[in-house]
Length: 478
Image (tube, rainbow, N blue to C red; front, side, top):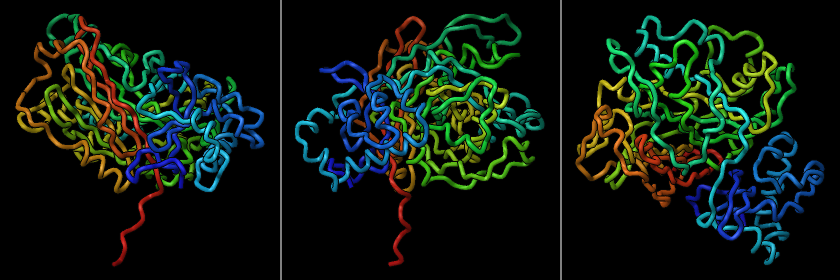
């Protein structure tokens, strides 16, 4: 239990302790912090209290404007830091609790802080590791008899994304322009994307890297995974469709990828590990592992359009639906000798489950735009319109239910839009998303759909949350 007041339904109990980078109006320098209750503990202020055998020699990592140096220290340092923080924040430890001056300097209210990218992302790779998502895409574009391409069940398919356009939740996003060919019988056209989509994903940050030419064996892959964030990999489906052959995604993806600012460490996630999915055919030996590294994290996506009083739930999924594990993704990424570095970001790909309501993109939910997604009260969508707010949440057990209850209600306004109509690019220059819808899940990330090409774009200003406790106890027999 922490001496810092933590509400029962808080997203930041002492079991979580996610890392982030923040600044404040009175101190604009980005610095590393840990979330606890409604506060941020500034690690640059208390760095001298990390006196363990590893961190006593590396206290300077908490003076950096990003987490890369700390990520690069490895598991021994991460566990030492986590144990030190749990001790310093506990009710039984007087060192920080009873030092009034230190507490005044060390704690900042989350409400007064601005969040930044947690790391300097050198490289970003997006995988394609949900079997249901890959199957859905294959059926839509190649037919059910060729749904999965021949290599999919043998290796974690991925592509290299654009690291420079990975942004923290709240960063303005512009509706992209590019070439499209909406009519296959006519030449391509240039203009604003009309089929703007979201993708429900999770991603992990790499800790220690590897030398060029030295692969990471799967038996040690877990030592290189620091922690996780939620991700919305914005996608321009009409641009993507025209450009992706033969080399894969390019401008249809590189215009923006949103991640949460709080990074939940893997040690906080391990209580939620479940057995890995059975893989048939069995992967090649370098990809085989017995360590449970699939995680039972309930995920949901809600959409809130302009004029809607409440968001409508459009997807309920789970991270456990991934076919390829993070250990396999990281191992495969390095098997050719590719050198990974601290702060590299590796994403899961769209997370879709077996039922239609668990599909993790509008392309799937609308089945390539052939059916409207009901938002309630006459509102429908096929793809995103200007001003739409996408909220991704996750959690376990009762906390996940509370998130859905908080954020899942439909709106009260009658208003229907079609994604392919001309007004798809005619939104307000900026849409400010309210920051008071603070759900109670593992993670909570949001960003709004982009504005038209002639506008600066709309703003996704949701504050990202992270909460993690122990798995809920079974109900009492009484």
